[in-house]
Length: 432
Image 1 (tube, rainbow, N blue to C red):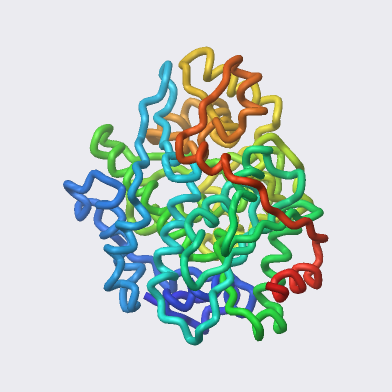
Image 2: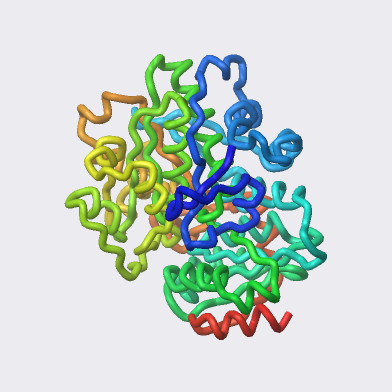
């Protein structure tokens, strides 16, 4: 299968090139030239995430040299579970995606991307520099996936003061081939810098560059697998199509869910649950796309005012009327997020991170007729212990971080503060 830019249907590249480039040369995002159609019956007897991922992703690798190594890639990337846990007190099931090494769903895509890139031939001996703009969890996951991998450097860009204290520790605890930059600005400034750097002639001549944000198709493909596996489980157990309430910021996870649906998996509704950054819900309401500066919230990993992957969604559904028939979107403010965390802990004992709480509150507001159409699952994207300063006062007790996360937090901090301009970032990257 070949891939094309969202901005140029005429130029196509193989999967390896799309992954290596990250961003298309015209500034667009890579998407499959055509979507395969899979028969859910072909997944019979495949119960684990790893088992589902192989037949799901094989068509997307068809014709590429990486296809011969897909099994190795999956063995390396999918070595932790993504369980569909029962809901409490009559609530929806919860798809838990936080059991990886950095306790966030980004671990799936980051480890998969690293495994792919490590198996690609290099045109020269230069290390590949991976640029990452992060509003919280992406940077830590990418750093963990590439840390001390020969032939790679990582540059993490995050908004200074725009991530939780624990997330910042996770972003800045690395050494060797990983550098962390605290950018004076918002996440949107970090994302802009990463895109500018990827297109900069000076950096392109001096460095081999790629991206590990959800602009990279190698991040999105593996994220399809968790939605596919959960939808197959729901279909087998309930005899109905699944619906997913997806915490949404840069919309990469939403695109992965949509691609799984378009490929034939038994997925019905997709509800995009946003925080107070309302660009997507407002677009769904009136059809006018108005990106804006991001607003800081307690669900900080979703603080995105101009989500890159809206370009992929619009490419998949160019007609606004069809888009709003295939998705719905809602915005949840901080007060409602806090209330949902308190209520869930009191009524059912489940502790939610702020991002998962956005999705849980979105499900709680769902109208009865909409709930009845599918078996809805709330997507839990991060472990609540990553946000102790928010969650612990609301539930009245201390949270223990998972052992893998606790080990990272014991490392010393290393970071460099920079202004949000390309010249400054270029200077830092070329100085190494």
